[in-house]
Image (cartoon, rainbow, N blue to C red):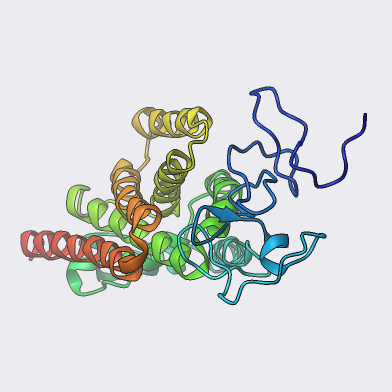
Length: 298
């Protein structure tokens, strides 16, 4: 017998879990507390008890319920956006645009904005680096890449993992996570790498997204094996592939785990304090690392 569209009894996947009623290819163990339809992280909206689907929140799909008075929220307490991937799209577009500038302008542009501790740069004809007060390099280096393969790998990772995470956290929290992770990676690179070794790439921030995704999947009781396998592969590449700034990957991952845990597990009554307090904590640690290294070099 055919099932009625949108009924709680959805086709089950190979793992035995039903598919989201809006995204059947996404298996989930979470159901709407009002209509009992299975919902994935992108569709779940925090309620006073459990999670609800977008249709029940809007009072649609024949549920017969009136819309909630409160504004719908994501798992982490963020605002539900019409385009849940907007920030991810902007970040990918920004990275691609700057890579185009790099290839058009040449090494002078890259040398002016990549991450370097303290060194003489022949193309610029001067001593450059964070130790010279160029702290902006900690941020600008996060949006530069060294080759087509470098940016392709990073942007595919960002698109694959960033969209669902942005939908689960909300735009503001996603931006905070991305920047905190990237800065943690940059600061650890500055602290531990050779002072004349340039570093660039979005890998630190992306590793932070991996860490936060693992935290979120554990919180929702999802099968963590796919993301753990992918993370392990990336860590192996970090360890054995030449000319990779492993410090950025490790720093970004640790920063993402800290901020991600706070984003997902913060108590509702003190949600903003805990979530943005964790971002501030990561930022303070990054500043301390930068000050220590600057003292060593100057």
